[in-house]
Length: 574
Image (cartoon, rainbow, N blue to C red):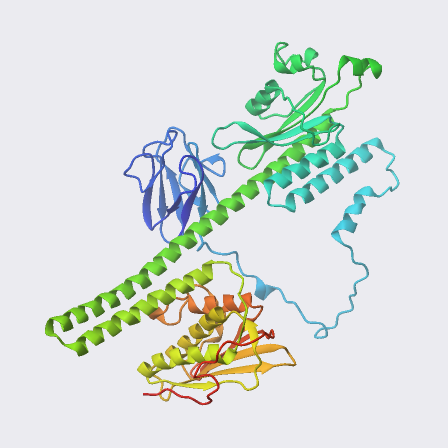
């Protein structure tokens, strides 16, 4: 289902689902999407979704409706990742079902070596780092000042592009940009400030001082320059504040004695996200000592700084956009999880309610058999909800296995006992074939027990209704490979080839309303935590084999064996 996620504004962090039909957006409580933003009209806009396309319409609002920074005059069809702005609120539109670009895989052939005559050969290969050295070559004509400056500027922009593409951390990005600026420009001090989306105030993020490096000395920046840049959205260069008509001689820039400064806006795709400021400051004593002052900054430096600021702004916007996308996806996943769990919990509660009704009837009639039947229903559903909660905890929580020296036949044997109890109700046989001469191994017995139990339960369910349904569980130890294998075979309905990978996706179940879609993802996660994995082989109509493989780590003294461990060929059939 499409959604609108509030990235900026009073309702920041709220996710609104876009249902089929028309949805009103505005301050009024009658709107399905209500925004607590005083700049938004009571009935500001309307979104209409017909199951495939989503169109937004402005309803004559006073401040207008903007999509990707442009005001819409008529109906506008939204696309995935569009930014919708109403007043001071910015929302991100996402549509998971939006059509993907045309598949052209059938129009491009990748031919394996040897199938077609091919006389081509690789004559030279080059890494990205080596390729960038083109900008440092001293070729003929490099003595031209214009060409030298152009090549230098190209190198600067190339390195800036690399810097902004290698990190999604805004603080690291800005620090790297400021470091590169000081390599290219003879600035004494510098600072990058970002605009706080809530207060609309510039907040310093990175500062640098050439003399003191990252010293603790305070950096004083002229508010006169900042105000001009933000109000006019223009970069400025000043070489002498006292002779520049743009500055009021009583303003802070003159009082501070700054000789040169460059301040440029960080203009992104949609808005200004901050400013970059650098300056030089010489005392009268320094000017006398240097016998005058020669300007360090030129218009070329200003152009270069504007280009750098634009690159940095795009990177900041992309990082924020990516973060908002991830948050929207997380909230959507939470919503899906709640919906799926609510469905399963409702079914379980209905079973408990039915069992309690049967027990109540038995109590009224003093019928012990009816009471036992009702309790059996309640107990069965309590086990279901307990298993579901444990699966959710296992899947959602990052954990390290707690390996203990144990007998694998004991752990799997206990699973066989549980599977036999369930199989007896479905007229399915369970065969237990413990491996011989398996040494004591170190693994997480609780985790592995749960992983095997989930798959064994699925195997029993797959044989439900099959004539002579049978599940075979076996353990194998390969000392040469240092691997432990647990195989679970069934002669059930089988799994279609296209569904084999999907069965490990959370909430995907082949058992319809009977399954939670948690068992197999949890089992795979437990095996992967042990450094192993699960392999599946299946034929529709014939059955499936699940092989659980994990490294065989020798342990110490084993725990006590269970009564079922070591007995071969046990079967359960009513």
